[in-house]
Length: 143
Image (cartoon, rainbow, N blue to C red; front, side, top):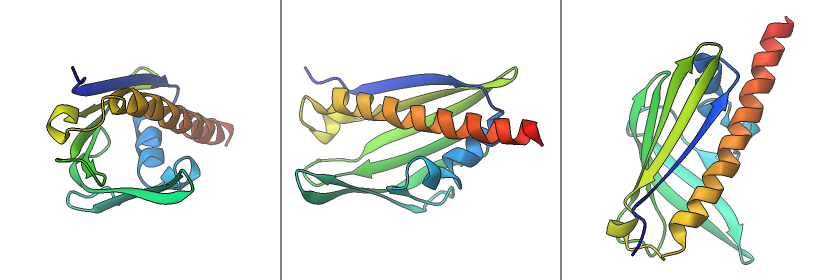
């Protein structure tokens, strides 16, 4: 049976405002292939090269509650429906807990391997967000 959702979480030693800024306007530093504005309805595009050809996922921002919640839906060629992604940011003292949930794999009729592939991809991207946010927080602290 196909897993319908994946959830990936991390803790980032930076304020929720710094993490939000890195997730939205500072995304080019850690995920330049993903483009969108943090506004509901904004188009969203991610591009990458797969097996020597350019591929893309397209969608739109569905939720934006600065600085705590970002949501979007996106789809690729061959999916029956878009997948939904929700990213929650919660302050925990000096740190921010980030929880990302992507759902809808069953409805989209994606390949059975896709949830595990996306989980690995989200871990990679959240590690990039963590590095960028903690670097920015260190720069602010040094001033």
